[in-house]
Length: 168
Image (cartoon, rainbow, N blue to C red; front, side):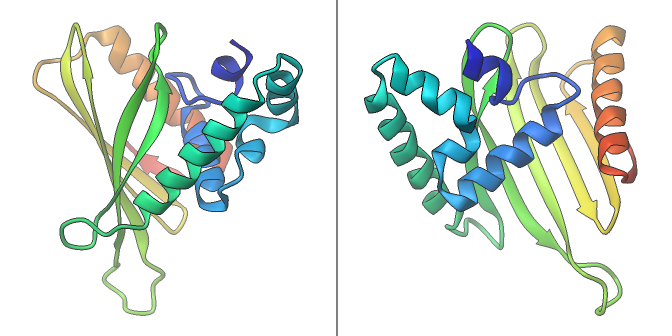
């Protein structure tokens, strides 16, 4: 429960930072950096060092898979997501996105798609470039107002925390 509440991305205002934190750990390959000292020590105290080792192996495998180029210049990776009931695996796809100006530093384009039992498939299509983050949310059916408000709040919180500008 400690790990689910503190390090696994979920639909909270900290979603963007939790995903970025996971990606940083994925690139570094160190599970203790992702779980934090408290989470790793808790597993060891509970006699679950084997779980810590399996998580480290899985993180390493995910990191290697994220280095594989898919179609075009897209890279895919899996990250954990707590949907309020269980931890799911979500796929995200990334690629560099060049600006119009050749001297401009390229940004990152991402697409995350997932299935919700009540609403069907949702897709988040984002572009992070310089200090700007723009997001498109796609669905097969109209989202309830409360969900639209929640998505807007999570987006606004992420923008505020990072100091970026952007639109959804």
